[in-house]
Image (cartoon, rainbow, N blue to C red; front, side, top):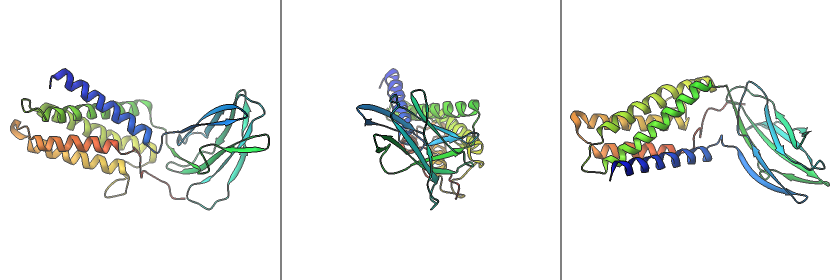
Length: 261
């Protein structure tokens, strides 16, 4: 396969994986549409928020006859539901979820009301939102860019390993170094800012993001070891590349930090 085509395929794989991981993760907002009084109302309900302020929940509703309420309680508790009305601000209905400690979660529902009829957004099941400490933009941006680069070089290592005429060693070195920097160094730093701990995977917890990072890193180390003295070590490289692709298809933050109520 020509180098240009290899890079194009690697970029497509990386972008597709990143988009899939983002859209299927537990922090991705719940989106949808409902019809009330002939008006189509689109909504976006947050499932992640910084805990330095209350979380605003805002719905665009132009019809002044439409009102509604926000109901919320601590997640995984038998607390009674707290109900507060939606406040109209121009063409939007707004309410606020009270901020929680880092890793604290709330279950909440939004119900729109018009003509005596109630319409719940996102169905009857409540939306779950997790609060986190603010992460400095520069730290988060560098983490994302490095992880993105590691995914790109991982894909290139795997694609190159399939070509018997090429040695993937250079891409293995880059992928392993970037994955270590992004996942093993910067990842825990981001988690420390967000949830107060550097590591909550094995052997200390069940955080799937940490555990899948550890698994993929172990395979890159194995690929590096198998490729000593310039050997292509194609089987190990393909295993590490495939594992990186697989773990990045697992939704981000699944089984992540959760404050016990």
